[in-house]
Length: 301
Image (cartoon, rainbow, N blue to C red; front, side, top):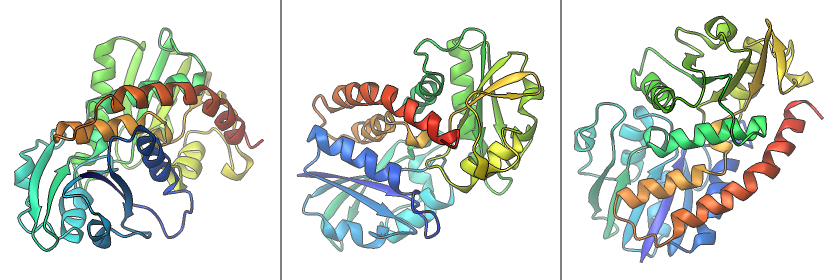
C-alpha cells in the first residue's frame, strides 16, 4: 500500500488557508492512485506530528505544499514527522533543486519518501501560466502582455526569492509573454511599483503563494493601487497608471496544483498509473468555470 501526505502550513486566523490543500487532496483521491491521501498542517488539525500514525500504508510519500526550501521544509516538517536520519544535505540542493530522500520512520515501521516543496518543481511553471489563462479567460494569453510573478521575499531566507526567480526565468525562456519579471513584497523590485517595470499595457500579476489570505487579498491589491481599501474589492482588470492589471490571486488555488503534488510523488517513485493525465484533464475542465466565479468575487460582487 502507498499513501500520500500533503503537508501544508494552515492558519489559526484564516479559515480559508487550508481550503486549497483539501481541494487538491480531493482531486488526487478521485484518481485512486494512492490507497490513502491525508492532509496535515502546522497550524491546524490534523497536525504533522500525528499524521504518519494514522496511515496503514508501508510506503508514505510526503509532499510539502510550500513555495520554497527553508525553515518549514528543512526543519519543522522533518522534526514533527520524527525523521531521525534527515538532514538538509540529503537533498543536495542549490535552493531550488530538492527532489526527494527516502528515510525509515523506525518508530512506526514505515518507509518515508520526503519530497521537495511543490513551489520549486518545474511543473509549477505551468501552473503559473494556467493561472494567467484563468484570470484573463484567454487560453492563448501572452502576446502583447507582461507577466509579473510575485513572491514574499525575505533577507532571512535567500531561497524565498530563488523559487520566484527560477519560474520567472523559465517563463521568459518560453517566449510566450512580451515581458516576464519577478517582484516582491519585502525585497526589491517591489510589487508596489509593478507598473514602473513593464512597458506592456496589460500586466498579469500572479502571486506565488499557496493560499489566499492577508498578503494576497489585502496587502498586494492595496500596494499595487488596485483599491484604496481591500474591503471594497477591485476590478479585474483594474486601471493603474495607464496599465490594465489582471490580478490573479494566489497560484496555489489553481486546480492544476494537484498535478505538481503528483509529479513530486512520481519523482520519488510513487506508482501513479494514468493519474497525472487524469488530473490535468479534471483541472483543465474546472479552471474555466472557476475563473469566472473568482473574478466576480475579487470585484466584490
